Image (tube, rainbow, N blue to C red; front, side):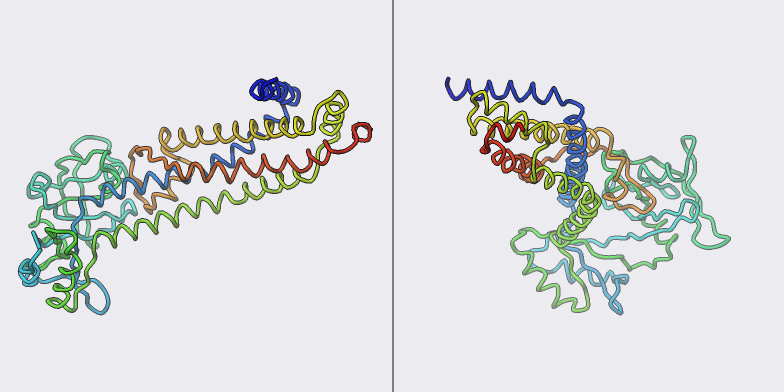
Length: 379
């Protein structure tokens, strides 16, 4: 018999043996798939958020200049703008106006800013809002005005010009866009003051040189590059993914206990079956190969099932089980569909950590039983 036919015959026998104990094996696959589902869901979600963050930061300024006062960010003077713009290598430099507004009605924090793109600047008395703002305010009809209160007894009305789409909800869910006149009036920002400066560098390789010259021009300022922001997002997503993995640790621990119990020995029924196979002429290698096929089918099937369910849970259903943990918004949660970003290295690591230990746990007890005298095993 050729090696291929031999393995096919062993596989047929293994499938029949699994079918005889279908209830036990289905329960095992369900527990195993649950562990894989939890880990894969956290990995898929965090990986997709990283991809979205990278795509978002691609359009961010190369350098952000912030004024510091007593160790905290403060408004920066417009007179500092020409000092940055005059540095060789700087393509553009512009002042930005943005801030936060706490909405006591919904308990949410809005990000209010003046957009730099002309097509996003609303007319006076109007605002452009992210898709989550009408949702948390529970606006029931089109054209509902947005009232914002700065203090007790104060109420400012803004008409909603339009709502930003869900395709940019990751960065615009809590956004309120105003024109410059309304922003300065609402937050009492005097003319000639900006929140920070956004700088674009002609050659990215000269960024460190530009930062060095800008530090000499503005010694009290803080300089934040796009790479600094990207590293911060990376650490944030790694931390949040670690929280989900820690939550799945209990399930992993239970599965590890099961695998250890599996490695200590076989049940009486399984040992008797191996003794019969040895008595009718099976070789020890055939018995071990059959049990490896069994462990591979169970673990591989559970891995595929858990991975497919995790994919559907994250990319089709929006990960309702733990989206709030990984997205990170306190009140406003963006409503958007993630783009699949599956890392082959992560999948391979997950496969090795889940399937390989279970398959390997079957080798030692099977070898010990198969190497014993068949008559003693059956007795």
